[in-house]
Image 1 (cartoon, rainbow, N blue to C red):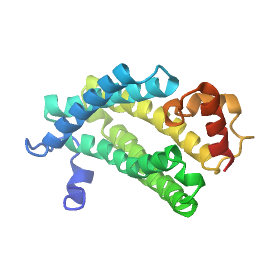
Image 2: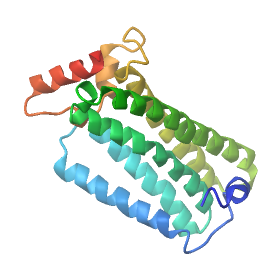
Image 3: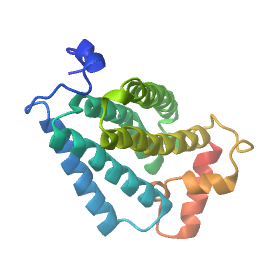
Length: 212
């Protein structure tokens, strides 16, 4: 959609609406509901789980606005572009969980690390910057409720993305431990990404991955 309607994406994030085009947003809302319920029922309580639940609730809140108001559909499309970087983010996680990143696929894992960082900057950093800039330029053309969603929701996602970026930079060796302390790193790391049968094993695996 973005490739075929680039001018529309930049020019009409507020007023464009199509029932057919809104279905992908509805489907995304359903996914966030399903994954949120799955996290509550099947995942252990951790900082990572809390952050993911917060992300899902914020996503449902923002995306529902586009569906219910029949406005901001392309704004929601812009927000969904952030998930493009998740392709490399989850590939990276799979390589870590399977330990392929430290054994037979070290080179491939390095490539994925760089692609993950590049896609993160483009699809999360640039998109976040654009959404804040658009909301600021159109501040006087929005209802107060929509202003709160644009700036409040944007701030929530900015906090999540910055913490995620710090975790990626540290665990992939781009950011030295002297810059981010071990205590702060523990608060940012995804506990369920490195979990195992016992706490001691999980800690040793986490340290092994960070030292590579």
